[in-house]
Amino acid sequence: MSFRKVVRQSKFRHVFGQPVKNDQCYDDIRVSRVTWDSSFCTVNPKFVAVIVEASGGGAFMVLPVLKTGRIDKSYPTVCGHTGPVLDIDWCPHSDHVIASGSEDCTVMVWQIPENGLTQPLTEPVVALEGHSKRVGIVTWHPTARNVLLSAGCDNVVIVWNVGTAEELYHLDSMHPDLIYNVSWSHNGSLFCSACKDKSVRIVDPRRGVVVAEKERAHEGARPMRAIFLADGKIFTTGFSRMSERQLALWDPENLEEPMALQELDSSNGALLPFYDPDTNVIYVCGKGDSSIRYFEITEEPPYIHFLNTFTSKEPQRGMGWMPKRGLDVSKCEIARFYKLHERKCEPIIMTVPRKSDLFQDDLYPDTAGPDAAMEAEEWVAGKTAGPVLISLREAYVPSKQRDLKVSKKNVLHESRPAPISSTGSATRLSATAAPAAVPSISISTAPGGGGRLEEVLQELQALRLQVKEQGERISRLEEQLSRIENGDV
Image 1: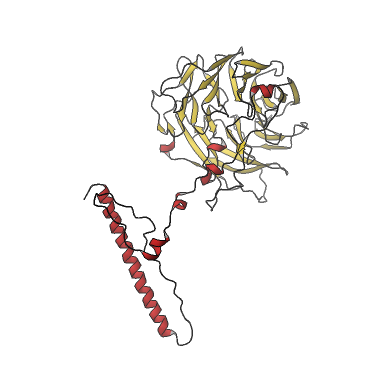
Image 2 (image 1 turned 120 degrees about the horizontal axis):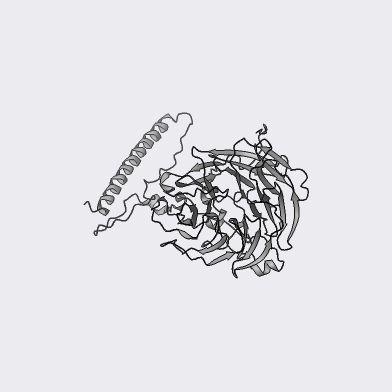
């Protein structure tokens, strides 16, 4: 792959990925071995869901985000399907609602309890039956409440109203072959799909028509992916005729030629793209790879700009992606992935290095929040609306150093330690009980000022000794306080 020699200005040029420590991973999870090219993992700010191995049916595990470490083998799962689970997706408008598609030809929607599962969940809130073959794709509408799309190996796309358990649209004549993936547009008025017949289609589900179609988007026979970008363009991953992996960017107004086409390598794993509409950065993860490549999409040629690669030793079986509102904005975290190993889920944090610990407005524009822009009935009636945006500034938590409270009185007038009560409970020394401030000293360099300079230096030396003694005294008192609190005295 050829990269540009000229250094391009970008605030994301130095984004780096870092896996968390072992004790912050989710260990001893038996990740599903089913042969299907979905991500096997979906994440929201409260829960991590992973498709797992299960005997006698299909199951997936739902873990609270903070429940890291070794997961007990007896930990309850969501196990209502009678065949292996192929795809799962959290509802963007409720952090406790998740949809699953399975080889048993059904789509099920589940309500997860507030604090996670305490016993196996076998009864879904609603079971949606309409496919005649296994269901490999489920994806929620980005802006309308309770609207869910499913696609099966029967080459049928169904749009459901989960609130009433009814089919809204049954699209059975658009795809002549297996559907690889489906992606909603930013406002949910259209969706695009990648199909085994090598075509990428843009579909208006409410009118039931194919708005645009690009045949042979990628020449290779292996699986493709197509996703909508925020500005309406389409980004695809696929294979060339020589089985080299490719990325391409398309303008829906003119699908004759791609706006940009890049070749990556000759690996054979399907490329899963994850898109951040706020920063216009696309992260590309190959199944079976041990790396995550990321690219910035811009308005000027060559449109797709390579940023960097995160590389690790272990290959990934699947990948989850945290929504923007679940990130730690105080650490300039712009993405968090949940990488599936054979028996482990490992979070990987993508960070933009910044020296300031203030809230970074340019990294965190307003992002899609958890509120739906409209009801299912409004969407069916023809209404179109973008996501309801929220500011991440409220999620910003200043670093601990900034929480320090300074009392000027103590610094200026008191160098005495805080009193210790007779009950043994000690009043903690704050950082303000520091040695008295050293006064500023002006040194005269006028002729004949040598004697004055010597006096000043002696005074400065004496003050330094005082400061040192005060510091030692504070250390002794803190040790004494600690012993009293621990009952050692």
